[in-house]
Image (cartoon, rainbow, N blue to C red; front, side, top):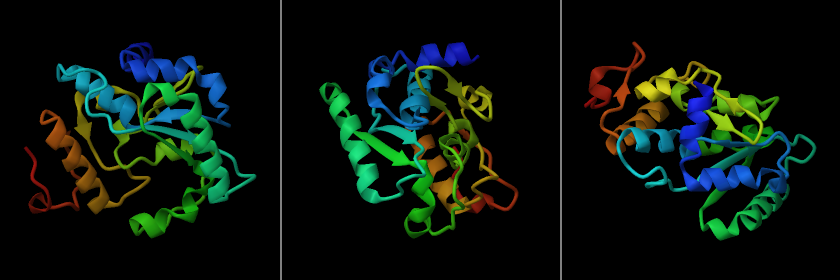
Length: 193
């Protein structure tokens, strides 16, 4: 199924061009992650253009030697330069420093990560825990949930209000997606279509 997934996400021309230029990005333990991948799949399954409504292209890397905002910004600027002609928005995040800002942004503590893959593992919805680079596909929860459109909370990040907000946002854009709540989330907390 990984070969099918890779073929599907590379139907998005931007993803394909990013992978073609991967070595030039120079990301330590780098991954293309998140919406540009799973949204490409959902767009295709919905009969939409693969690039439809993808707001940004997210990159994870891991560099524990410099946790400064300035160092991360320098990597961001480099990636933007390499991909400038694609005319897309890119977001670059050093997974070694997520614990420095996560609680302030999202209201929950976040223990330090040991790799960029661990950052992918902690996405709020297991179906969306996917990453690719020029050598491999990383999908710690497999790919079946993604293709089935089943949105469930991630036990590694059990932040129910954040899950509900994110899952509802996805379902509004792709109404066929199904939300499966954890037992502690009441049906009145979210409208399931």
